[in-house]
Image 1 (tube, rainbow over the protein chains, first blue to last red):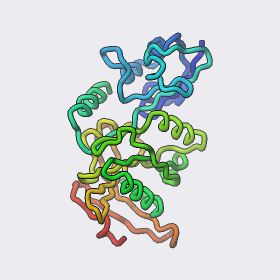
Image 2 (image 1 turned 135 degrees about the horizontal axis):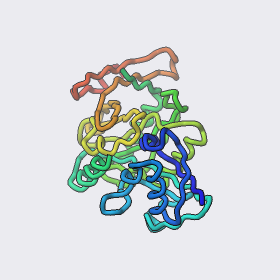
Image 3 (image 1 turned 90 degrees about the vertical axis):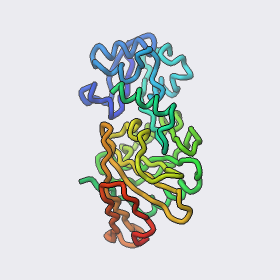
Image 4 (image 1 turned 30 degrees about the vertical axis):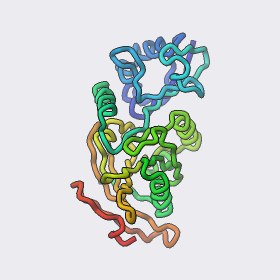
Length: 109
Length: 164
């Protein structure tokens, strides 16, 4: 089962520069595990140690944000297209919540 | 050293967007042809956070705009946002989230009602490097350029004092 995965610029160091890679899996979680077997480290940039999708990474299946499809449990089918985009976010103050989350994002690099 | 060269009309549109959304932070993109380092198409984005201290692109608008750029062989040359009560310098939060190492991160401060502070930065692997902003007066004369040379220290430079 082939699923096309679009990789953002900042994560192409894990795919040898490739913008699009193929993967397999019945769910998004399975797909990321499959990708990590060939592109080691990629999954760790998208999934927290607690096993949840990072708050500030957007993942889409076709035209839908996976947060509305069950996140890592989102079901995939042959021919689906998965797009990964790091959230574009920021702001004037490192208030507590943002700081905690962003530190997490940095730690995952 | 990197320089951001950008058309006056685009800067004016970004400032107008920042003023319109003030006191909330405004955010957006200026797309340009891949590899050109030339920002040509201004795309104001919604701030999904609708906050005075935080911005975040709406995830569905983000996908739509990034796909559109892909289809047009464009990339995000400039990613901009406003700070509405502080200087136009990347905060720790900005640095942590910066995910486009090839982009110019443009910041506009609207804390002064009558003048804007406009500064540009590269943010790569958590390292912030300020760069000069060259505003090109294309509507008047494509060769007429005003340079806004900002130092590497975060000293405040008033945009209005630079000959606008």
